[in-house]
Length: 568
Image (tube, rainbow, N blue to C red):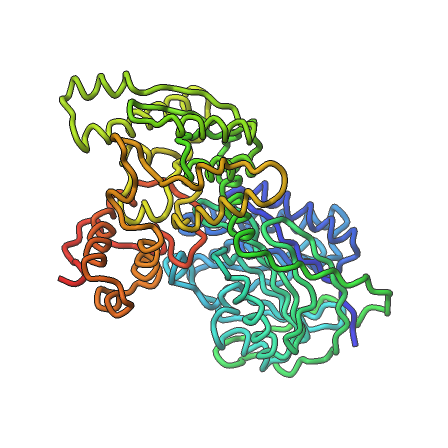
């Protein structure tokens, strides 16, 4: 048996910030060193941030990444942390092209390097566009234990590096990950990691990234699973966290090296002999699973906070209509950035109801956010009179006057404008381009309308004074662009509409499938026509945090100019 103290550094990296990420790795390695760790594992591409997208193709960035890695190894040694084996993932580049890579830093040097083998090319991933797959595996002997490495997708696919490490023989596998959040994904991870540990007949250390990057959010959920699939420890989600765990493992699993299947296996020795026996630390607690609505709210808060802060914004501005969508966006922003940094603007027109104005003001009072009223009736009158606008054109100019008002306040005060539309509206095009669709970020872009209501009720139940006025939740939703307007004038009931959209957008089901599911032909025709016609609007909508299996954007890519129609 051999003991080893490992640290799982679940950290929040920033894409492109090589210096900042190196400082982050330095700081967390010092924490691991101070905790007595012998091995510290960081998430995938922690040195560069993830995903780097086309930065991977920029040679200067790859060169900078490699230089930063070498410098970091020396800095850690100078700081007295050279005896800790630090597993750091980064962007490499060789004669074959860019590589998603992992290295081990020890004694001031880069002592091992390995490239990701399985490159995902589905959903939000385009890694075959960027990277060349690796065919080598480095196994390090660390204090008498044989430690293998894999990177993210290498555990999400059957066979490949995990099977090869199992055949070669390892005592432990470490797996840096950058696995983005979507609803209920944590229910998939533990069984997956357990299967891979069983496949390799070795414990598996899974370390995931945390934080927001554009429309993605990473939830952490790092864990250690024993060879028999038993969960040893699990980190809390949506926060940075250092987990320190003592392992006591059978040593001597090494069976072979050289060619194993399609891989070339190389063994390297850092410490040949096991450590003298020592008193282990108490096993860290396993983080409790989050209820579904709590995890969605946490994802949305983190995504908004990181988008704002990583892009240099400290404050946001949004329109407060008194409705449910703007209310939920405002409370998300308050939770993410603090009430003093969320500026709400009521922009009543000639058609705005008294309750809309009072509900917007009540929300501001409940949350404590700065609030102002900017009437738009005179602006609208100028446009409609000069251009002779009526009907839908008159309705849309109201939304566009509001958009201009918010952008003006943004330019004047440096606020990030939040678009408050939800996924249901975005799906069917129920928004005004260059109007309520203006902004730099859309917090609930991937949240269906029915889930918006669920989140509002959930947030009001979380203790303290409920931040969202009850009337904003209970009243029929309305854009209030004409007298007596409600959303159901233009759309099916939201409960029914979201069911159709879930099948068509999330499930990618066709016309015949939808009819077989029991939806009426007229309803299917109507909804699919609206969705297909709104692609041009979606392309111009701000980014927003992905929480579902298939978000609009890189998850679902359809042409704007498209004559195909389901069911014709």
